[in-house]
Length: 247
Image 1 (cartoon, rainbow, N blue to C red):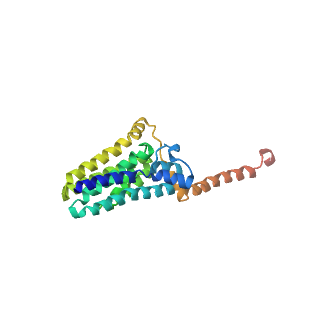
Image 2: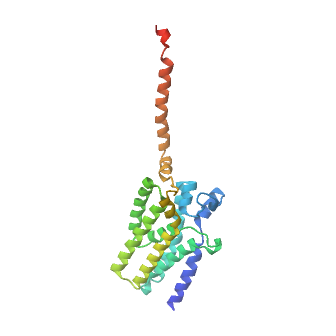
Image 3: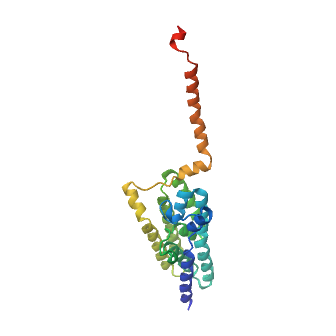
């Protein structure tokens, strides 16, 4: 009987995943359709590319909550049956599927990284997620390919959870590992076009470093330094008398 409740969890979480906050943020704050901007992908990274860090952080937070809270709630609902981990990943990955393939948007959704991040952030290994998030932000600052940073994050957390489950071995832990590997491979498959463009050398950078520098005002400092030598050169030219006058 309890497994019938899992069907309800899958359906409910799938439709929760249909709520796309990249579309919502773009519509509410910019009165635009995010699918007509940048790469056209209704996801956090495209929001970062088009609207900047502030709107991207807001989108990321909302997407993380969208996936993490249902996963955590479902986990605790079934915790009494010893199925916390199983219910957690069934719910979380159902949200990811709803985000990637939303029926209300004719199955044209995002790529699921923000939702997957939210699932991991609300899990018992949340601290690993925070550490890897910082590491991937530093990586993105220097490398500037967002999809690579995203896949590194998902890969690291997936491996951490596989090791954790293998050691803990809760109820149906091997099913949880199958779900994690499925989500991992799905994330990679959703970025196949990015991988192809990277190999060809045509992948578009996110300009994350430039956006961070602009956020902290480094651009203004560079301009002030550039103006100084130009002013000195002009003064020297104006004050130098002609050769005939010196004679």
